Amino acid sequence: MDKKPVDVLFICVHNSARSQMAETFLNDLGKGRFKAVSAGLEPGTLNPLVVKAMAELGYDISGNSTNSVFDYAKEGRSFDIVVAVCSKEAQERCPIFPGKGTRLHWPFDDPSSLSGSEEERLAETRRIRDDIKTKIIEFIAEYS
Image (tube, rainbow, N blue to C red):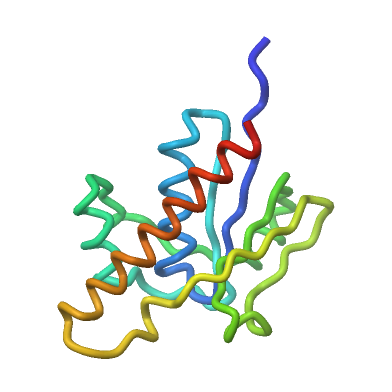
């Protein structure tokens, strides 16, 4: 009998960058052992630099929707693990999710708060993307 995938929710403020990247990496690299979704406190629109940075690694997230953590709660969804990916600075605004699941906090910089030229912001977005991917690989190893 196949083991049920571990349900993981990634949350941040806007569900436009960090949580989207984490969801994408876990669903791909977790090879069916995990089922990840993402949501935010104030769902926005996908960050175009994140879409571009992910495309560089072969991931097309341009059609992803941004989701509300409140909608998931109203639906009565439950998760085995809830991971907040808000920065340390935004931690007090980072949403929480009800339930008994394990709670983790992985602070990553917010790509929407970056300044500089487009190329400088893209370079920093790539760094954040790569940091998230590394953390996902470590997470998969730890939970496997």
